[in-house]
Length: 170
Image (tube, rainbow, N blue to C red):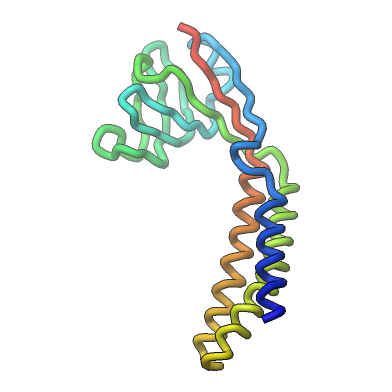
């Protein structure tokens, strides 16, 4: 039981030590439509459209009447399917540019996640072994350990992400 407590403690420390997305620094800038191409073309963007849909992908071009985007993720496949799309100018008032700024938090997160995953996996395996020391205990421990390691990596990835909100001046 002591190993399980250590694993739970390490998991709690891992979760508490990373910057949360709400704490991450977000820059907000205001630009006119004709200034967008110099800043955003070629970047990954997240558009919140006026109809409530969300579209994510690479901004390919800024045209006078629309944004050309290679949609990778969409909340409305009927209106905005994946692939190259033209998003009308009237549908966009703000969007977010996302980029990975450093690798520091990913390295820290992955390392801490692996260490915490080892202890968590051992604790889960020992805990399950009290009932049956078969393959279930082994796979349960491995699954818990890998899950915590992946969680550390994802938290680190969020810590490295820089977000810039662009408001379009009419």
